[in-house]
Length: 305
Image (cartoon, rainbow, N blue to C red; front, side, top):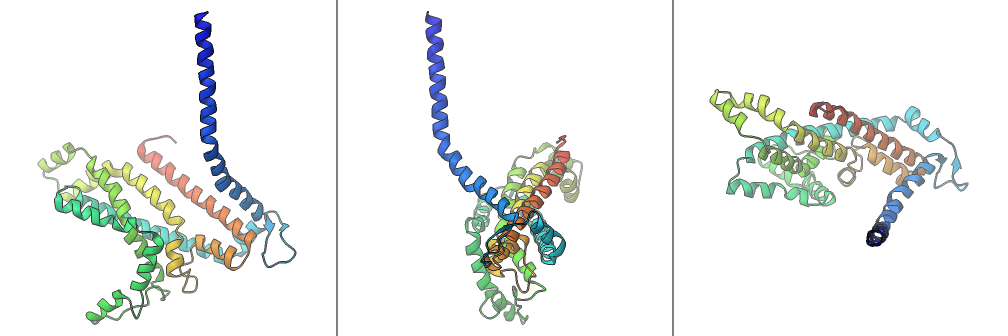
């Protein structure tokens, strides 16, 4: 009788544990569904409708017409996609190499360098909106500190976010200023984990610094670098706040990324159906880029998936 009684107690405890787990997780799961799944389903439904807020007739079902209109008849979509890719490429290239270089300089440690590390991560602590407003003031042609210092050296200032030729570059520099420390921290962690033996052997053999970096440091730090790049690629693709505060896509549409164009479609032009379709297309683009990148990263890591 004792073994049966023991089994009944175990079954009762297991049942109570399952009830406790379900009860504990239910609020979080319900909240997650309400804030992610439900809006996503509503967005899919809206993307299949001609939903114009100013139309008194209300939304009507049109199937895939919104997607066809965007992909085949909307030149602004392709322009915004191009600007998005340019912005992402510019941010990633500068942030990666600058972060890698700074991490290399700070990898040896020391009190002074520890202080520098702490100071360099301060931009990450600020919100993108606050950073953007600060830089918007600094970029001001008449009141900005950047043009002020240029005039001290008899250099003409510029309309940093008002000139179509340099507006996108100006926005990229703000993103670089804020997020290079993120790349630097991850690279620094990679540097700290590298074995010392290959570097000591290369130094004994008389290898030059560039050769050590090219043939030892980069291959060893590549897994960390690929992970950091993935985070920043996804984050840069969906950047909205910096561009919205600095330029709102201007001048003209020279800094209008796909994320911002989707916002304008929905909240400025009131085309909810097309904005919903744009959001889905944008999601698919991000997923496609991420999958291509992960496939490449998997090959670099020696994986099969």
